[in-house]
Amino acid sequence: MTSVIVHYQELALKGRNRPWFIRALLRNIRTLLADLDVRHIASMVGRIEVRFESGDHWPEVRARLARLSGIANFARAVHVPADVDVMAATVLDGLRGLEPRRFRIKARRADKRFPVPSPEIERRVGAHVQAELGWPVDLSHPQSVIRIEVLSGEAFIIFDREPGAGGLPIGSGGKAVCLLSGGIDSPVAAWRVMRRGVTVQLVHFHSYPILNQVSQEKARELSAILARRQLMSRLYLVPFGSIQQQVMLTVPPELRVVIYRRLMVRIAQRIAERVHADALVTGDVIGQVASQTIENIRAVDDAATMPILRPLIGCDKEEITQEAIRLGTYETSIIPDQDCCTLFTPRNPTTRAALEFARAAEGLLDLETLVSQALRDTVVEERTFPAGPGLCAVVENGKMRRLLA
Ligand code: ATP
Ligand code: MG
Image 1 (spheres, helix red, strand yellow):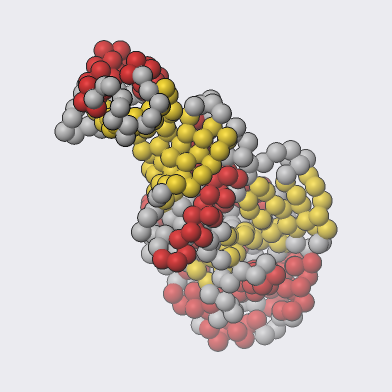
Image 2 (tube, protein in one colour):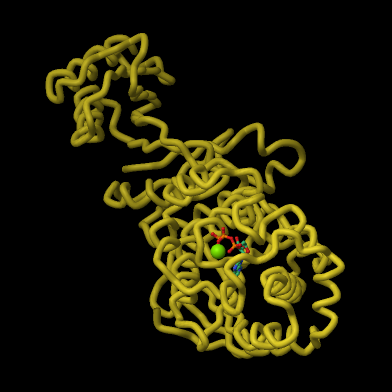
């Protein structure tokens, strides 16, 4: 029988909240693996053990656990009868097909009645692996350590630890709403915040039907990729085109991007209040594009009544790109689309949106009507992971409609 031993970040889960964090992680792992023949899942001293009916799903289990935040590392473990030949065969099975590595076997007898002493178990199992796979034994600097724990009547074989995503368990840190464009940065920003245990809902502004639907499709795909990590994601698709047309009528071209952003913040904030979220998240990086100068950030923040978190603020594009690749969002983000922010804006928007100008330009708009119209026409989609048919729901104008995914 196969198990997985999950270690969380000891130091991160400190103090009185510890049992609560561990329960959150346990719950997340249970949901994450719900469809993969889990027999039993339990919290032990300093670790969580998941037992499976078989080892068949290991590659999928491994891929899913590597994405879940709150895990420091995890390792596959196999229970076998306490018999050295069986142990050797099982270790061999677990390593077959992997790249050869310098390895060592570390055995420990919790049950001293087992007749074979630990060094001999190590020698026999090690020799078997060496002979069958050609892997070199290296006792001082092994690349791979396989542990064998002999208990009464059975042995436990623990393969290499694999790195987890780190961070804190999803659902342990409040709620935020991320402004998700179709670009590279905002999904990475959303993940950075999710990884600290915050539940992040997503808001995408699109200019359909003035522009095509590609940006919405990208936002949907990104939302599905993030749901694999957060176990669910809710995507609010906000029609923004008619707001932009209104802005175009009264706001000078060089101020439009900042005014669009201020309106996005106002709308996202209203959504945040509805879902009891306490912050917004964006993918802004200082100086990356014209709208992201420190002056413009100030002019955008001026419209906010809740904190705007910008986890990428000091990152270079290359760092963000690498993280997007690891996250699995990059391929979707680079699909060419028509970004709503470029609609009715000049090629060179102002890099210094003097606060007073932005406020004055906005004074000519009926903000409340624009915001509430956009909210009324917003469509919400919910995705869960793992998803079965019918698990993707769409809420339209407050009414829930089930979709066959
Ligand atoms: P990204 O790669 O995230 O699109 P960017 O470098 O293209 O970022 P901008 O287009 O200036 O930068 O957007 C800055 C931030 O504003 C984005 O990271 C995102 O949080 C938010 N944003 C921009 N456009 C939209 C949109 N259409 N819908 C939702 N949020 C948006
Ligand atoms: Mg963008």
